[in-house]
Length: 303
Image (cartoon, rainbow, N blue to C red):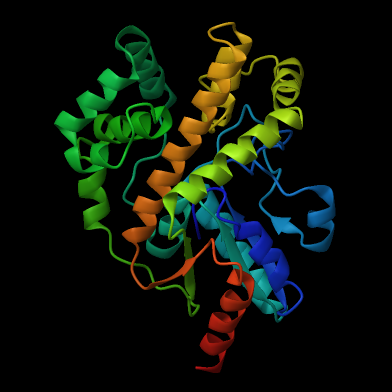
């Protein structure tokens, strides 16, 4: 587990040479087809060496939830272990990790009518105002969400409208499920936030150079019904790219907004990580990170 740009994929691929593992992606953006550059999806050469489960499984016009992930991951883990291999779950979507380990059965299913009503309200007052509304209803959940985190603000408000209870109170009522596995939870956390921010800026520049905007244009042509309201387009970078293509700001501001949004994502991911129990923290900026991860796994297996 780790924030964006922490080097999770590189560590996972390196472990392929040492252990009989199969990688399960834990990333809410990598599930989408044709969204490769902006999601930093592993390239073809990497995937040829280290195939990832749960990549490219739905169109950008479709939705995928934490409950979907939990179900899919459990089936994959059972299949992988039945073949005598080790499931390695790799990603930065912390809610997916939480869903797998603790379950999300207490949350209501998505309701399109409620979502449409919330989107309509947000169009009138703006998402920062919706975030303030959530703060009055559920201060615990709003405290971990940025005012522009539209997808999660919408979901938290939707849960309250449907169930009459806040998301934080429903989480508090949940009891941990018993997974039939021993878990080793490795959290890749930077000891220098500024260096992680530098990595984030470099990677966003590399995405732009690799043709990120052209990728978004192709998406709009291939999926004619795709809009900013689709969950896929709420992924970091894509919303900013759509706004740029709509002429709302120039290339310099696109870069600034994209990097800022990615830094905010990393901040949220680190907040989640620091609140997770029984995680072993490793410095993702350590030049010997891959070897140290393997040593921890080896020690865990021996114990």
